[in-house]
Structure formats: C-alpha cells, structure tokens
Length: 83
Image 1: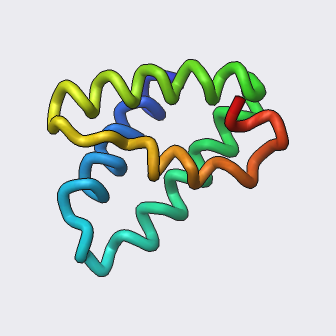
Image 2: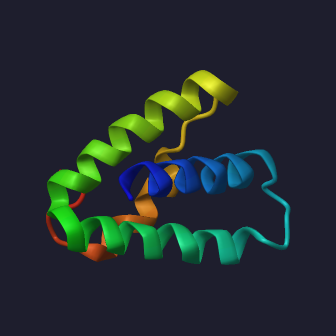
Image 3: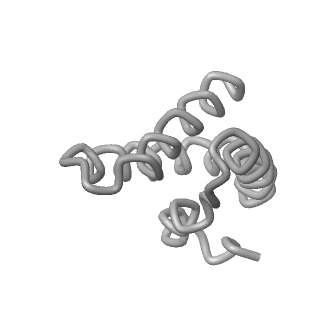
C-alpha cells in the first residue's frame, strides 16, 4: 500500500507543481491531505516524515521543483507535524 500511496502522491504533487493555474488544484490538494491522513493513521508522524523525505528527493530530482509547500497541507493532521 505504501508504494501505491507514494506513487499517487508523486503524481498529485508533480501535477500541482507543474500546473499551478489548473482548476484541478483544489481537488488534488484535498486528495494529498486524505493520503496524509491515511499515512498518519497507519504510521503516525514518523511515517509522514519518511514519506516527505522520499517525496522531496524524487520530485526534486524528477522535475527540479520543491514540493515543501504541498507538504504543508499536512500541518493540520497532527501537532507533531512538522518536526
């Protein structure tokens, strides 16, 4: 399941970073938050941290854009995020 969520997050975040004027951004943000909730429910703040590390590295390497602003969508999931 983790690999599927990771790939979906990469697709969602890549889309958002490359299509900033798209009308689909809001729905993509909602799905990013939902996935973050699933990750948190499954593994807590440590799991969010692990995912964020992978996402930052892959997206930065693939499209040379920083996904950190999108990771901020997870701020409301727990007081432990970000660390």
